[in-house]
Amino acid sequence: MKRLKEVRQTLGKTQKEMAEALGVSLRAYQMYEEGKRKLPPEKMQLLAELFKVNLHWLLTGEGEPFLTPPVKKKTLTKV
Image (cartoon, rainbow, N blue to C red; front, side, top):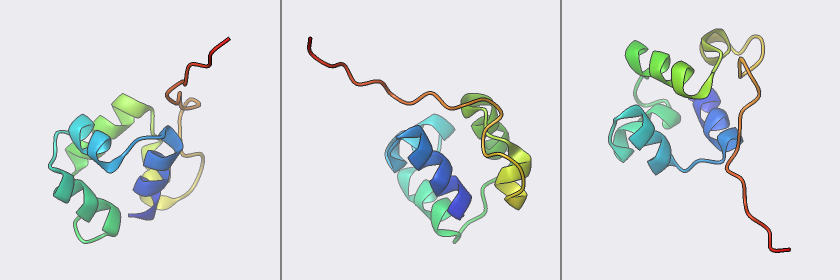
């Protein structure tokens, strides 16, 4: 699923991190992204709750990907 990959990349997460967040194996998550397996509704709901993903966008591509702007991991810079 192209949009699932887009969400992950926008969040700055690895496939492994997303798999762990959703409680699935890395291979299962990879299959979701590749479109070889459908993301179960309960995992879509969890994705929406954890990362504020717009489910309408995830399913249809219409609207904005996130309900609120995503917060990426911050990198510390030395002063």
